[in-house]
Length: 151
Image (cartoon, rainbow, N blue to C red; front, side):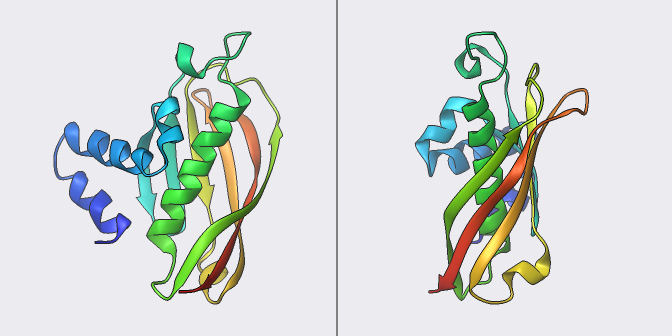
């Protein structure tokens, strides 16, 4: 079953479904568990993942660590890729370019976006990513580049 279908099915179970889906998605790459992620929204070409602000994600000044934010962005990119990629293609991350533009002083929403035309044929897919604080301020922004190839 495709990731998008699993996500939609999980939403049918109030309270527990989203948490169960998020845990299962994070467990595919266990280092994601360190950010206590919650998949907030998932559809082709778009994903949102919450990265909690808690002592396990904090740096030495008490804000969400830059790498915790990057992990949230990578998870958002990964679930977006799984929900979007055509069945005849596969993907792997090729590179990541991020700018840290403000302190992450609250929990973050990690957003990943692509355009439908990015997935038409094998090659590079630029995934636009940003991490946003509760007050709407973007703290991290950039691009994660995927390499897609035929299965």
